[in-house]
Amino acid sequence: MSAAITFATMRRILAQLKHDHRTLALLVGVPTLLMVLLRYVFDQPVLFDRIGPMLLGLFPFTVMFVVASIATLRERTSGTLERLMTMPLAKLDLLTGYALAFGLLALVQVAVVLAISLTWLGLDLHGSLGSLILVALLDALLGMALGLLASAFARTEFQAVQFMPALVLPQLLLCGLIYPREKMASWLQAIADVLPLSYAVEGMQQISATPDFTGTLALDVAVIAAFTVTSLVLGAITLRRRTA
Amino acid sequence: MSSSPVNQEPAVRVRDLRVARGGREVLHGLTFDIPRGEIAGLIGPSGCGKTTLIRALVGVQIVAGGTVTVLGAPAGSSALRRRVGYATQSPAVYADLTVAENLRYFASVLRAPRSDADRVIDEVGLGRNRGQTAATLSGGQLSRLNLAVALLGSPELIVLDEPTVGLDPVLRQELWELFRDLADGGATLVVSSHVMDEARRTDRLLMMREGAVLADGTPEELRSRTRTSDLEAAFLRLINEKAGSPA
Image (cartoon, rainbow over all chains, first blue to last red; front, top):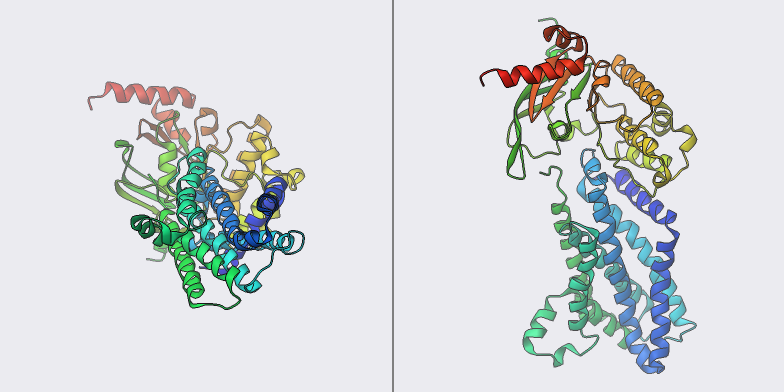
């Protein structure tokens, strides 16, 4: 691995996004819009205080999943991946470059949504701001890593877009946001226990409930980080220097 | 024993190369050498296996058998990744980046000098399009940008798949002059084309058909061997000879 190539890759991805104003606007604007809608749909500060932080973890996850899977699919189909694979670039240089670029982007996204939630929308955060940003950022990186991995199994952009509902919506149903996990049937709980989004939502629940960095939260952070690293390594394995 | 064996090693040495794609053998045991400092033309109709052969030379093709040695090392080995430049037929550049941004990125991946981006922009004549997004380039400009990437870092072997498709005659002439300059500077070039007219500008021709090498030699040799005055006729005669001979 080379730090110079990794940073060059990060700068290249950011430059691509810089040219695409509409995508940038959507990346920051859509989660903000959803948060505003959520606030006024519930119209009850207590409920918003409980659900708001959970969604703050979900938005970056979902958005990064879609953006990362399309971006890497484009890299595969346009031939730039094959070109890079003939050059002295380690697979982890490429993936780390993506992680850094999308991580920075997620940071901006979370900062804007959080700023609007805490001021205009009057979100009352019981937990620490630092933990919230940490978990939101990890969620974004998890979404990115899963998106990178999913793109290896998509031949076309049509398929890649379908992976979002296929991989994200079941997790959304099972993660405890819509219905408490402990009240689900035991086989559903067992499935939820191995899905990363369950830990993302549980982490946010901890943060919205207490200012302490609880043991449960530490475990959630560790599980999300482990899922992210595993997906990135699996993603690296799917990048082949030689193809048929 | 005075001459060093390194210099005698050809730029490309292919022995009994077999490649299968989609369960079908598409290259049937190719064997040839390309000496250093030459422009080798890979000529043959569309679908004859040129692109597959080129992919095997740069080491991105899974091969079924045989050996491909490039600059003394197995094709695709990590030692070669800064010494071989490669341009695919369809432009492999970032459509949403400018010409200069594309070249600066690939230059930093190759750890080429910073000035290299500007050098190759001038070499392919894209100076006026430097700040233009690749998506807004014309087809010919895009293929020149694609070519420029392959020239970054001054590679010893430059492998180009149909680099002159869609270019007007003046530009095509200029690019062949550039290829000649690069070869005079010591680089080896492998250039594929389906246009016979380009074959006469090469030092060595590999005529391919249906996954096999029909003929391998200088344009002059091929013309005299087939007793024809132009290469198109030579190609046809070689096909007929092969069809007529008991296999």
